[in-house]
Length: 170
Image (cartoon, rainbow, N blue to C red; front, side, top):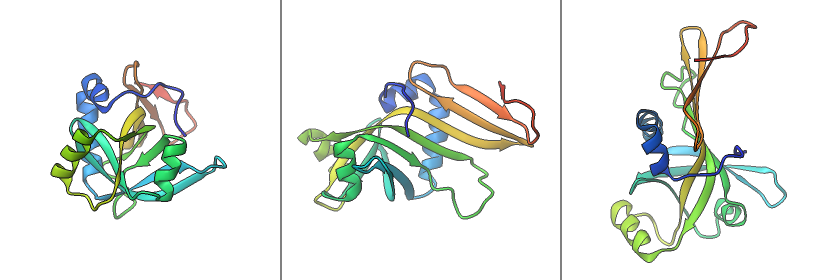
């Protein structure tokens, strides 16, 4: 579900690739609900809806205590979250997803600041999403364009034509 890359913070991602981070954040902010994948105890994927927040230089997941997704993340912090694709098949703004590790936040000061900014329904659990991979897939003419960021690596851009030609790195 995630790459073998070591997760970093959202701030690290923004510092490394500010324009790409802005594109990814903007794409997530187009819609309220997104799709989260966690791992069940048997290792199979669990897919569920989720709202995300970009606050305090981080990507946050809030959820009800004892929800299946919260229990999954407490047991195994690996996740993938995909931005809502929107109302049609056009995907004009591309497909965006983030994978990494979710870190449960218990610091009272951080929780208080989050509550003051977001006013979530209580009780709730808060997880900070530390990205190990950020991907945007979109179209440029007839080419499928995939941009991939991983901690410690340059942003990669891969192009695939609609024919059988090999993938090209731009």
